[in-house]
Amino acid sequence: MHSRISARSLETALGGWRTREPAYEALADGIRLLCLDNRIAARTLLPAERLLAQTLAVSRTTVASAYASLRASGHIESVRGSGSVTTAQPLRGGGTVFAEPGSIDLQQASPSAWPGLAGVFTETAAEAATLVSRTGYDTLGSRRLREVIAQRYEARGIPTSAEEVLVTAGAQSAIHLIAEVLVARGDRVLAETPTYPHAAEALRAAGARLVAVPVTTADGWDLDRLREASQRTRPTLAYLMPTFQNPTGRSMTDREQDAFRDAARRGCTLVVDETTAELHFERPAPVAFAPDEVIRLGSLGKTVWGGLRVGWIRARPDVIRRLHAARPARDLGTPEFEQAVASRLVERMSEILPQRAELLSAGYRAARAALQHRLPEWEVPEVSGGVALWVGLPAPLSAPLVLGARAEAVYLSAGPRFAVDGGHENRLRVPFTAPPAEIGRAVDVLAGVWERVRAGVPTAGPAPVDVLV
Image (cartoon, rainbow, N blue to C red; front, side, top):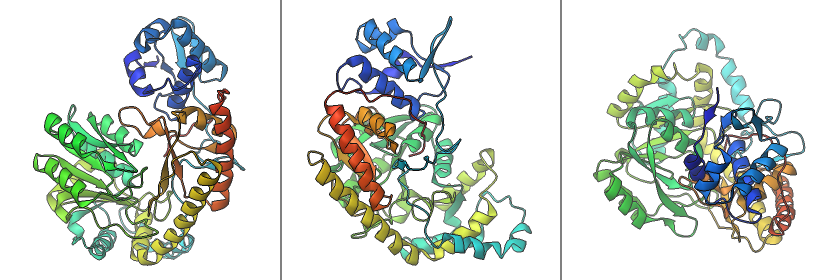
C-alpha cells in the first residue's frame, strides 16, 4: 500500500519549477529535491503522466521524460499496475545525517559544539547518584533549570518567573506542542516566507492553513501583505523569528512589531522563535515585543550544540498550565541528565555567547568575502548576527545548483525548501557556521557548478537524503 500525492498537491509543492530548459529536466530536478528534503516521503505514488501533464500545462512527453530521468537517477521506480513510486534514498553516514569524510555539510546551519561542553558533561556526571534518585518523569521541567532560564530572561530585560517556563526536548518539540494545543484543524496561521521549514511542517501537521507574510533581506516584513492577510483571514496564530530571522538574517523594526501587535489585538497569538536571537557578532538587536505580548521559544541547539535536545517555552502561567496539561500525550518529559547539563550552560551564557560570536563572525566574513570574490554577480547581504546568508542568484536556478553541489559532496538546501507557498528559486541559504576554510572550499565548488548550471549542463545524479535544516 503506497501513499499518494495528487497532481495539484505536487504542483503546489514544486512552486516555480520551470526555471530552465529542457523543461523535463527542470521538472525532474524539482521532484528530486522534494524527495531529498523528505517533502515527498519514500514509497509515495506519483500522479499519472497524463494527469500531471494536464495540471502543469505541459506535454505528456515532458512528464514522461522527467519520470524517465528520475528512474535513471534512482529516485523513482515503476511498479506494475500502479505507476511511478518514489524510492528510499541512502542516508549519509550510515543512517545518520552526518556527511561522509571529505564532504562539506552546510545544511544544518548549526555550529560545532561549544568547546567547553565536554567538561560540563563531566561535571554533571559527578552528580549521577543524585540524578538517578529522581523519578525521571517531569513534564514541566526541573525547578533549577526553569529558574536559571527565568534569570537569563531577566538579564535580557524580560521579567520572568519559573512558573512562566516549560522545558521541552528542543525547540522543535516546543513548536509541535504549541501547534497541537493552540491550533485547530482549518485555522489560519501567519508564517513568514522564507521560514524555518520544520516549523511550517509542524503547523501543517496540526491542521493549520498557512498564510504567508513575505520577508526580504533588503526590505524586511511586507506590512501591506500582513495587514491584508490579518484582516482577510483572521489568523489564530503567527509563527515569527523577529531577531536574526532564519534564513534572511533580518530583525524587526518597531514599526514592524507594531503591525504584528495589530494582528494580536484581533485575536492572533504571536509565537516568537528566539533560537538565534542572541547570536549577534556586531551589535545585539533589541528584545522584540514586550514580555506578555508573545509566547517565546528558546533552545541550546544553535548557541551550544545541536545534539543537546533541550528547549523551552516562556509564556504567561495560564498558557504554561494549558501546554503542560497536554504534554503527556506527546512525551513524558525532558531527560534529567540533559536538564542538569543545560542548567550549568544557561548560567554560563555570558561566557558562551562571546565565543560563539567570534566563531560566527569569522564564518560570516569568510563566506561573504568568498562569495563576493568568486561569484560577484550574486547578491550577498550584510547581517549582524544569526547563522546564514540568504543569497540572491541572478537566475532562478537554486535547485540544479544544489543538486550539482551535492554531486561534489557539498550539501546545501535550495531556496524553495524555506518557502511557505512556493517561490525562492532564485535564493540559496548559505550558512556561515562551518570553519572558514570549509566555507571557502564550498564556495569554490558552487562557483564551478554555477558555471555549468548557467550553461545548461545537467546536474542530476544519485544524492543522499537530508531532512534537517
